[in-house]
Image 1: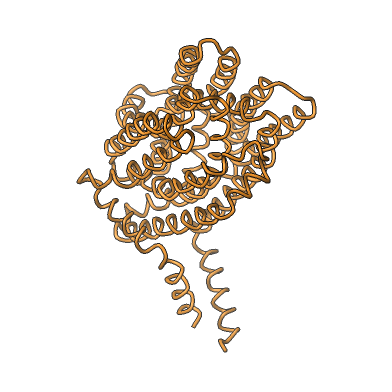
Image 2: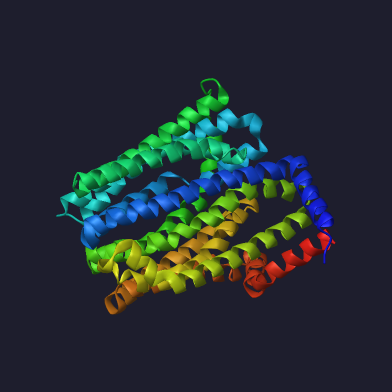
Length: 458
């Protein structure tokens, strides 16, 4: 029998190491806060969101999902691809913080106004006779202008202080959830639920502003610098187009279903996608917390950076496969319990769509790796390829297979964009090899961790 004293001593040494290593401690704290945020949103979103879906029914729920997809598509454009760049620049050049934040804020604010107008025009073109869709898109798009304050979140991410973003956003989420419950009891209309979604966005962004003032203890002295703006835009335009194309192959399915099938089909599909995409929080949390440290490590020790990055890829594949297998087994029961019998077709969509996570998880890691290694053009190329594949397959498969065809198109497009496209460009083949290695040996990761733990405890 193993000496329990040795095990206890090993455990204490691990805790002492964590206490001494400030960067590791901050990353773990960051992961804890972000995990709490995502768990709260997952539980609250499923509990309240599925109740709202039951109340609205597939047709009205589909209308809300259709309008949200249009508004979200254009909101992504207002981001200008600045998120990773601002996080990188603040992490590496904190002395230029006011210039970086002020410039990126004004760029995003102006872009938000332009894209809000574009979203409303898109709704008018795609659904000229649907007043409800037009109003919903207008409400959401105007609220999205406030997301220019997301630069504050980027600042907190760069400094591993995500709790200061989590607190105001969770407060807005809880208020929004309570408002939706009140609307259910009041038998409110679809437009009321759209208004609540818009106000939740607005309050979350205003909360970020308050959180920043609390952190700085003074009014910000941000300033706009034209040369810095031009430099940011020169570097970010591939990321902007890449993000837009990425959202196209993530959301075009809902828009095309609304045009080629029915709003009810969009409702069934949206119900399944929400259960599938809940798990995307995992790579987002890990990347936000780990990547700033890896960026600094890349400058100091490139070989250690590569080894840690490979471990990150291995972990993402392992977790995504476990999630997909569990959902494959429990999916039909989940849909029946959460949404009711009227959403029964969503279970088949979920059984296909859940496997996109196997590519999304590694794609989240490589998306930041492209920025760190100045491969933004390659990121654009892979997103363009994914968007073309998804739109083409949706146009081909929706008439033939309906919502299942749309789920299959999204799965194939994710595989092409997040994995196979890296093999085409010589500059990203090393990333393709890292992902391939992760797919081939992910099942060995638990054994490796167990072996190291056992050896350390010995």
